[in-house]
Length: 161
Image (cartoon, rainbow, N blue to C red):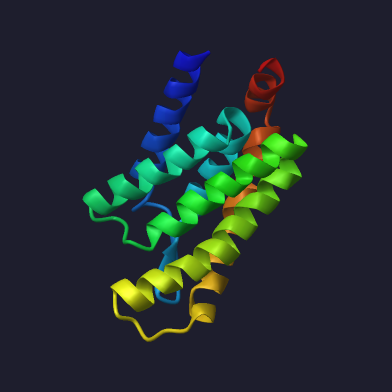
């Protein structure tokens, strides 16, 4: 089971890293990456909170190393994945994983991004400048995740675990 989880995590990391520069929506100061949020929800459901958080962290690191992300990639991807995983583990429903992703990325991640921008990057933008784009991206990615997780291939994988 451990090998299966590691392999799934590695595949999700590869998809998230490789699609970072291909699929994004410009929104204000940030670029919204709905695939990252879909991966957060999928990892939360298939792997749990700890793996989902690690997947979000590694993708953010790799995106920064390859120049396709910024420091703002960290709060949304990590907090959203963690919240999605925690709520899914607690309630065992896909809608709760989605709520965790949207709240974790959109609200908490957006606020943390503002703190990073304000204190580390020296931006004078207000917090509400970050939260709407993070919300839009996390909602879009969560809808993608719902469609993928409801598909027959992934749905069989979930029910067999």
